[in-house]
Image 1 (cartoon, rainbow, N blue to C red):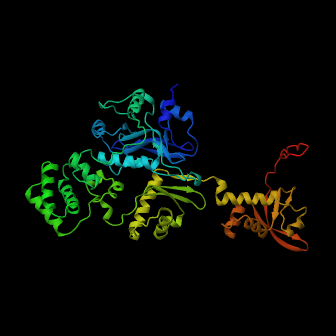
Image 2: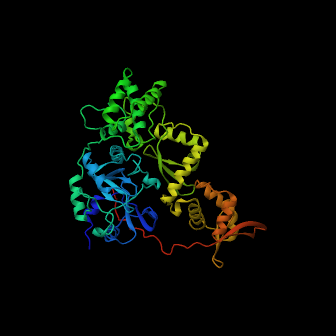
Image 3: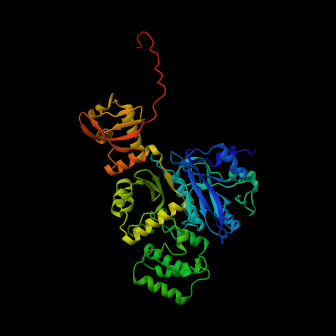
Length: 509
């Protein structure tokens, strides 16, 4: 039997839920598709054991814990095919203390491990900075949330763990020489790269003088690593935007120097003059969404830079990881700039209500989008939610129907009962033992529901729920007149009394 102790300690996370993913097919690009499910139960030792033994379904762990801390995080590079060895070499060149594992679909999971729990927000900040340095900005990171609302039924997103099947796996770590690592070799890699606190963040190049001082981190990284083929024009254009902001006088000469020093080969004179002419006409914003900046973006850090994007006006908040708690009515949980907020359906659907919720909970006013753009954004979030199966079923006793059933049972069995059927007129339910039916007036039930602050169901819906429980309207002749009542099958009664502790003699004080 495989020893799970070390593996479990390295990848421990949320202890009240876990994820599973059963592969069902592989598409022509090599990406494996299947069914992902969050199970709201603790991940047992048996599940860890079966994962390392390769018994389907594999185990996924939610890295963020109930106290919003974590001991590991991951950049999910969902790209096929991928040069794993080249990516490992880049990690080492940039001195990023991370471990790369092949994902189930042939992409990469780039892990950061820490010896002691840190806030999930701090882990996210590190991973976003590392992704930007790697030229992999915009990739999914785990934990996806900086906080989760466990008491409201919320869980974070799970990541499929490596080493499904132990040493016989395709989800192995990649060693520095580009070869696959056994599970024992992975443990050695973990010991080499696991980080003590405090973390040293990979936020800036290590040159004594930055080529883009106080400017966007993406341009700093690109000047340090080189601008990819096919991006030189856009790259130099954005460098010009920075130089206009940082050096109002003589920026054209500076741009020529940057062209010669950081672009290989440099742009020709004609192309260079076209860019200068464009920049002279007006002040531009950085083209953050275009290559090559988008692959090296670290927007959170850039907003803090003197010559970054902070002065470009309000940005739309980053929305992601929508999940649904399927209660009645449902609750929605959404990441807004990595902060988890709870919304009802109206506040998710209506943009004005959503903006108000962001102001109240995050001290943030998102800019107003066109109705078409807002609906497109919501549809994208909903599609991802359904694909990732981020829908949690609520327990029955928290639903409207469940509460209704409980309150009816309480009304029919726990309250004062009628001794004969005429006492129905006193507002009491009467049980016919011979028929196995309980009789009551609907207005008396409504009074009980109201006293228990239950007002979430209309009269027609209430009648339908009663019919679903086997009930039916009926007429009884009481005290000389016809009375409309409902009758239901009787509820199971408690078969034995509660044990009452014996009181000790003498004064207890």
